[in-house]
Image (cartoon, rainbow over all chains, first blue to last red; front, side, top):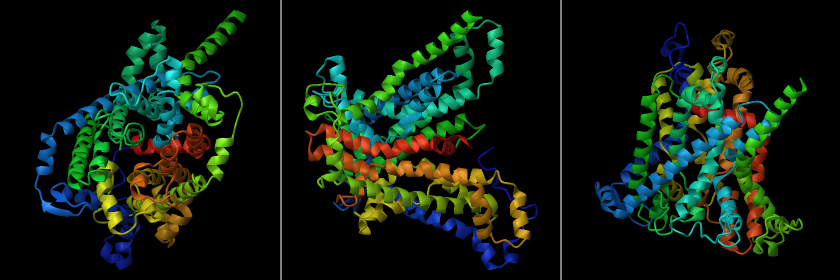
Length: 304
Length: 278
């Protein structure tokens, strides 16, 4: 089924609205009204407003005061801390996107066959989708606790996981991979179920072993799923906030100051709403480009 | 014969054993949180992993000590999540009905507009939304937590896809019999689409329950804070009571996990609908 199926007239002979009277002509719009009021006020308007604000200097309450043209953007592009934030974001996104995919792939492969206990294992692997990132962040605060946390007890170390610039990004990435593993498992498992059995059967007749089947059949067959999933991982990693706010506050220094956290810092600590808006638009453009890349790869069947 | 059976059983056991390492890693955060929450406080600082005795003091404290106002947080989250869930079920099924069953000018454009909203990350508009809400004087109200989330492109899309599977003749026949669209929707479409509505409901409730950034921005007083904000503030109230913090995490995870366990199928359908049903 394609994206626009059902958009064409479903009546064999559509009657003209004018002949049906006033109410029938506006009825469809009445059905759409509640949704579009909400979209209008909290999506379309703020989107335009964000573009507008990004070209202004604002006061502490976020009112646009001085037209600033593109200087919020050029100032950002000229600042090293902005590029540090972009670099950290891309590192974070890359670790999380591939890490989540790898865990999802391993867990899906482990539960692809039927055996006693597989239902429990599958439920456990999917479970992180239900857990709030804020709740998980608080749990990881204990796990990563510098003196009494699980990780330091197990490894016999005294590492300040979230306060050490060398470990902070790694720590929030591990938490985010854990959070993302559930959705990766669900999608990749669904992809694996779609691989035709005949492929495996004929490979078995040819005497292929497990790894040959994995490399030659499974992975090529599910590569569209893997590609789709990595895009989902990238987009959702770009939007991470709770774990940064609750574990590192963007620090130490700027070590975990990802774009969304930088937006929050700009707006609510420095009251620079114009810069925050400019960063928001940059975030939007990045996500848009990634989405368009996905679309161009998937002309055949659009997933959204 | 027996050796074949044993070998089969061995390989089944082997399959299960191969899961163990990664199963432990995935489950460890939850099990550890649970263990710390019932551990006598002194043992946390002795770096024990398994408590010597089970102690529910942290839970009693979380629920009864007014300083933590956990019952208020839970009540608030239930109010907000339920309202958003019901609101989305209504607005999304109405819009989906128009897109699936009715013909009107601008249909294609409006539908593409709905889909386009999926490309805007919520974080990119959150500053402007915060400014709107604060200008309206809505900070620290339930309205601020509920109203912006009363519809979603994903919900409209999920229900529309579901409606398109219904026989077109159904709507034609109803029209000929003089059945109005609202009546057709209430008496035919909604009952038929119950599984899809359930998927949307489970997904939306869980997402709202798990929200963090928006409630953090628009609530200041504990009387409107939701659970996720509530537990994350425990650390600021008392960094020494690690056990209490973990009890808080367990308390807010229980409803999420319950939805996951009892509505797993609906939830996964909801999750996948937004992404792969197209």
